[in-house]
Image (cartoon, rainbow, N blue to C red; front, side, top):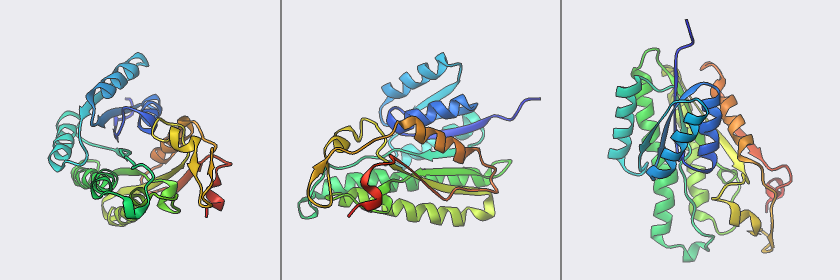
Length: 252
């Protein structure tokens, strides 16, 4: 008799880190549910995974919308019966802006996606993982180097990622009685479309501008697969994957 099917949900799955992690999990025999705001990249991912011999479901979802998130998890419950892994990956940033010039709507967009979206998905995953049999599951949050040390002119993004770290730790604590593990991966300079322009000419704390080294998103994906592979009695609370020569360690 084969191994039971393991169900994983990846948000922001159509591009970048989400795409790389989805492919890596599928290659490790996870059944994937792909979520994101735009249907077209998700459908492309389903076809790509199909060519690799993997099944996946795509559900267009705005993680900022509580009703949309509730619908997403209800479909997972009805179609798959359980959820073993949530990778909270969906996120946005704002253009580098001095804090006194940062528009409130730009702040709100970042907070709504990077923090409230993670909360909404975590809340629904927690409810499902508590009630399913066997009980429990794992939640992995995509944090950032900025969860610890900011870049210049990044108030909204940095605040959101600091808050995600607190949410990760709170979820890890509250999940203990229900066999729900929660950890966070903090990524430094992964080469994706989101960060391409930033890393090519990154504003430094000294006021200078410099190109910064990057790493392939596949390295991040392998780290997430490792975190997801652990039994629920073991947890990677925080893990940093970064370009070796990026200035993070000496930032500021």
